[in-house]
Image 1: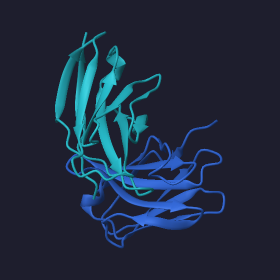
Image 2: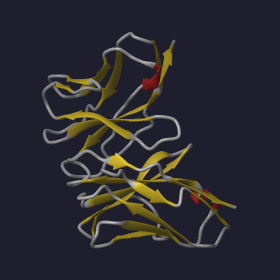
Image 3: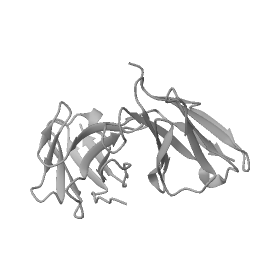
Image 4: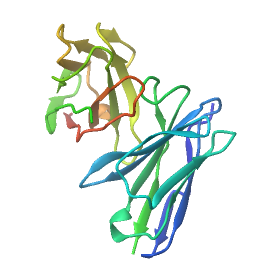
Length: 114
Length: 109
């Protein structure tokens, strides 16, 4: 089985722009969660989607949004980028809900905001 | 959020057992304990999880205290490849995983 795939791996944007990150979960997995990792704050939960519905949301401003498609693929969008949005964005998938089942992480998308 | 407390760093020698502690004093009856680890330049990787009794798998063992307020991840024979940041995570029911700062494990050859 293929693992969790995140694209692109690296991205450079400037302040004020918007960005869309993509995550393809393991085949058959219905839950996709997104995390932001920075040296200062560590790994922080952004949101979880299960069967196209957002189930949980972390403490991030509304500039961070996501969606999940019927094939379980997920996208995360960040609008009006700020310097502080520079981070590694990780996606994880699980067959059931995130808190109950093993989560499998992708390698991440490293976003640099200049 | 469901917080856990771990030491910032630990060091061990290759081929020796490693015991990584975690405190979760406010845990409730339905909370699971999960352990993930993150190797350099990779996403986190599942290690083990449990609810009440001790658990074993091919990677590690998880020992959960009788009152469930603490747990210990045991790597029976550490290798250099086990050098990573280890996260102890408590989940409330089916809720999200909340990662703390983790324990950075260094393995000496």
